[in-house]
Image 1: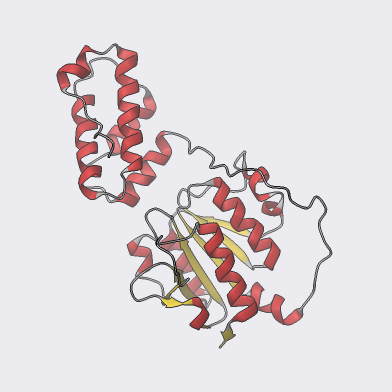
Image 2: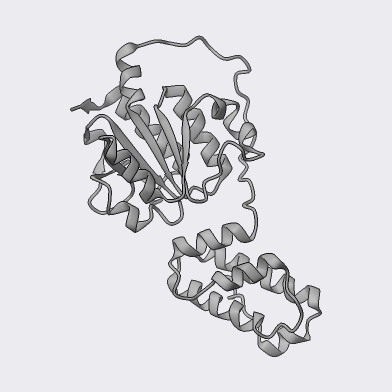
Amino acid sequence: MKPRAIYSVEKFLSFSDEKQILAIDKLISALEQNIANDAERQRLIEHILLLCNNITYPVPQKLQDLLKELHPTLSPHQVLNKLNFYSEAAMRKDSQIPIRTGDGSLSFNPVLRAKAAQITLICDNLRSVFNIGSVFRTAECLGIGQILLCGICPTPIHSNMAKTAMGTEAIVSWQYFKTTIDAIQHCRLIGFYIYAQETAKDAVSVFDTHAKLPLAIVIGNESLGIDPEALKLCDEIICLPQLGWKNSLNVGVATAVTLYQLIFGAVHE
């Protein structure tokens, strides 16, 4: 077990100005890694605020902005949003794999494409541009109606989106919403049934779901899940059954499996 990140005030004050900022950055990194642990998250926030209160020189503006917003009572989702604006999220990279260099011809099955066109994806604060790019590629591959990007989700204007989405970000229809709740309410107003893809206790396997079209599926942050306030607004929770030890799949992978089942396998009402 790694030792907990902590500095005494005396040790912290013995550092040079530059090293003090580096120490704060290290604590912020530890906060991000422990964001789902309530006790450790609160401890780290309190420790960061304590040390920063002892800094006597002007700190960088980004850090000033973060300190104004940081508080031990913030929920993990709220902290995640604050940290995202403190430093740009690093792009998550997988190993490069060989893929086809040429695009195939469009297969037109009117029944299946009609199903897919009635499906909207609601992305709840997915921070990774790699995951968003993966979602765009899957959506284009299946002819999904629309992607709604919410909160801190990177949008197609992100500098790395073209690389991860491989051009599909220019093909798939998308909208940005400030909050996931706004996106859910938008979908409900136009008559969509709202599903949440989540590993909750009362979730129903997607393979046992009689999907109600038109529908929207909320997909959430992999480490924190869907924001509980957004989850309350969903009509039904679906999941992927698992036989292994880990609790969940990567959000891009899970979304692809779910969409394939809903389009090619599910009975629709």
